[in-house]
Image 1: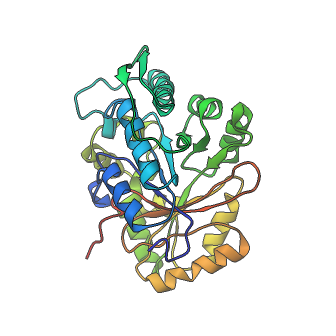
Image 2: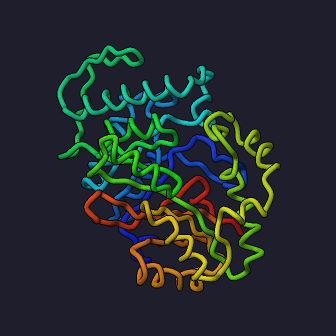
Image 3: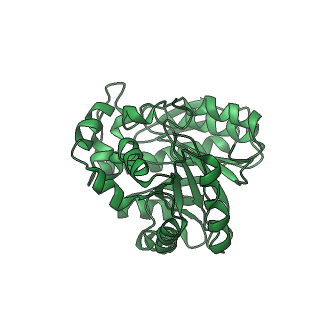
Length: 328
């Protein structure tokens, strides 16, 4: 659907759980990427994988290498320091932020080491790899995009990443990434919208599915189960969500939100009950600004407008947890 609609690329999350049960399925990302390699010619990026706890970085290195081969080089690995929601399932201690960022940096080092080819060993503070060799490698290692919410993670992305990916269109965040070593690297930021014929229905849909977006502070990184997220989001009202997410069929309102965040490159979530009507927003966005918009029935897709520091841009449709499920 995304390719037929004119998108240039796909993003897909790597979750064990969705944030809430309303978001539906949360499939094993590497199986889905294998399927995508046979179903589309579009590039694919994980947004994002945690290569640290639930899955060892050596295994992520192998999975990413195979994905890049199957997609004929059209694969980028987005990584981050994880969420307790997904990483606690083996009973491991959930480390504080500084430790997780230290683990993430070493994990990226391990993956890049294995992508060099040949037999490799690594004895680090957090990971040990012995006599490991990846026998299936792409012609070029996949780019590593690093997610970040706080200044430490953003600086890490600028220092060691091939790019940055975030969830809010904040020019200050992009600026910090640029000044921390990311001057000529990809930068992705995001926002969400809910595009439906009926604004009241759009508000209810956004509140039902994405109330977790309004949780403050580090709750998204610390809460361990969808049930905990549902308890926390019971405090989030429909009005709070509607203030943060543009809802309804008016293209002008969506364009205003898009242009307000254009200091970064926007990743937009779109929900559509009427695909034909929602599709009318695409040409408007394309005419006024190279933003990119994806359409789904009742499953979230996102759009990313990426900035490589030179003005080059690409469109991304981004399925998040639940995006493979179509509700009746």
